[in-house]
View: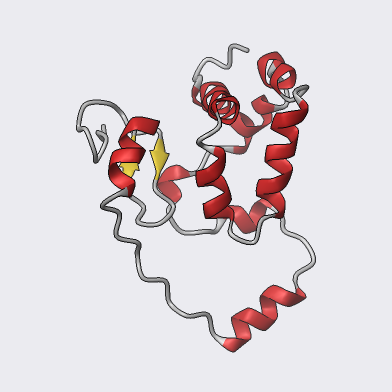
Length: 140
């Protein structure tokens, strides 16, 4: 079992989008971000850039073939998100819906997520999502 790369006490729930280390809480993220060393991203080739422009939409299969399989959630567990009364109740909040839309439409999703994680409502939503998908028994 893995431990948080920052405090080494808890099981990590999150991964830094910049350097990919794992951490367990907002407190550990705040400690980490001051010393974060982002991984160098290779420059995309012209062919990849053109291919990205030609794609109109994505599928679940596209996501399943990304690297870093350790963080993938099985489709059956993702489907539990749509069945969660707690998540539906949270999504009734117009401020949360606006936050989600702003993340979805942001050019820099990493920066948008960092900003959203400063909002207690978004942290509550994120924690509830994790609770639903991490629940082995499927209790909703």
